[in-house]
Length: 421
Image 1 (spheres, helix red, strand yellow):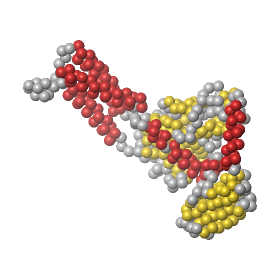
Image 2 (spheres, helix red, strand yellow):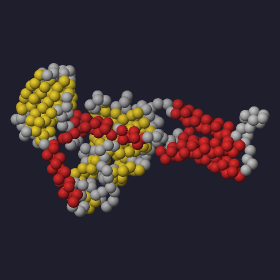
Image 3 (cartoon, helix red, strand yellow):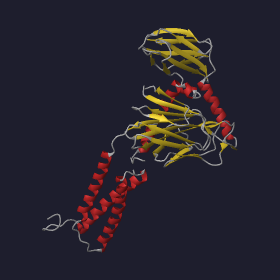
Image 4 (cartoon, helix red, strand yellow):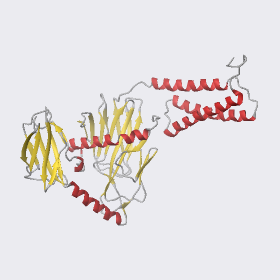
């Protein structure tokens, strides 16, 4: 079901920063959910670690990518104005113990002349913190840009792409609306651009409304209604496609189905934990609970890859549901006001000219269209965005017609006749 709303595209675009921030926070905190993301997303971030002893902060140094550990490097941790130093071990980690809880801290190191500084963080009073610093990010960006330029100059080849392991489906709740975010990485593992023989098309689940691209999406992606189109050819590496849309529900249990046009290398779904809400699917191998950086709890589910053309089918139960009665009452009142206005406008009028007949014929036709839309809304079938815009145009044109009829002498008359008597 779709909730009619104006400005919904701006709503979705405005959530782009939130969605990407959430992804980065959850991926850093949950490495077991799949392969690790782009190291640049984690650089300088501090993540709470309940498994570490209270007062313990570890700082890991890597060069350009995870697994390329920087060993034997001195790291400085400043907490509450007091500097401490330690050297990284074989895993690239420098460990600081006995750091007072509740104080502000920051980690820094110099690798090959490059100064690395973390974001400011607060040491927790329970458990510890993990911080990662990544060296060589700028050099890696330059190298990647050069490789992309060379690949862009070469002719494309026929091939395939996939949604990479860092692709995620995220969900949160607002009233009776389920807000979904697809954060997708279209991965081309070839050394040159790949032509699929046509665009990559993602048809969103039934009932998707207000779909829009989020900030950071590739300019080759576009949205029309509930269809997302990504045109090729696809450059080597990843093409980012981030989509926001909404689903309206009116029961405590729903099923969401999404067909993927290309293979999904890692199935990962995060759902905001509101009340007793739960998520299940035969395609999930694990379901656990994690916290975003803000402390908001989320259910995190993962599963094996899905083939091209495969459909993700998941069930959400114990959803927060509010009574639809106020919405139906509001729709009924709106329809009653329109009907009453139409009655007053046409009551007691006489048609004695061709001009008035034409105006009234047009008025009746528009009223019929408007009544059909209102009946649909009262039956609980929400209007799609084009239909909502049509309803507003109908009301505006009817107001203009009524004004012309009044000027033509069809309004209420005085002298003891009609409503003005």
